[in-house]
Image (cartoon, rainbow, N blue to C red; front, side):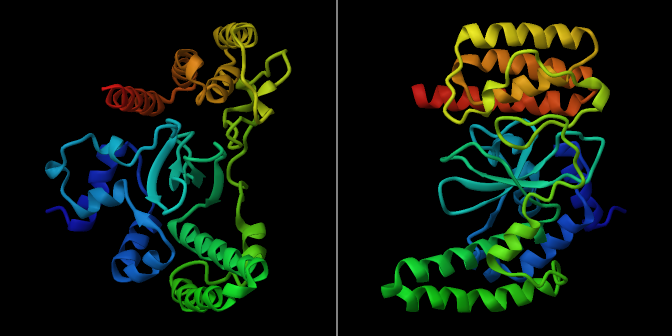
Length: 302
């Protein structure tokens, strides 16, 4: 007989195609018993946590759609959302065969910049607490007339931090900005071979990546690429892929991800790169992302 715990593990693996780490389920147990901490930290658990709350048979939509945001890359599996500017967090699964996967955040209503927060949901919650701590500390300086209100926020955070540290991040004594500077963007477990427009980079075997000959224009924040810039780069990336170097196609596909005029080029490059790198799960996630975007566009146009 399958235990409820194993049933949860099997359900998520069946839907997502990856094994969620033990700390994910430990955090679910923690969150279920300490909902006030998440509420105060302005974090709402979603995605796979929704599947743990409710049987998949009761759901009407594709579970892989329900927590998605329009520009989520195929690798991004949302697990939590915030209250401001589309802030959300997710596992970033760029090499499905090489866990652990980092937890990444970005604001869907702001700049498309993915930021590594940590490798466990405890890291996510702790980082959020310290971000709020720093924000309220800054507000005290910028708006002294409301100091009492912001100080009250800082006072509320202290026991939340202490309660969390009993379960995770207890060895981290830093708070506020000191914590953020030390632990955010800790990418020691991943080894990107090239940077990308979304700041997360790509991970491939080093012998699978050769950079394009043209300058990398996608690190210009306000770039609006033209066909004369994209077409030759896309062709060179395809040529390199045919020669056994899919890294350039992967990078360019990701660099073009948010540009409406080049979506089909992005999709084609990414699908081919995933196939060449033997990452069929990402091909599946890409198709989910395409179908989700198409559905959103049709709803908006109706």
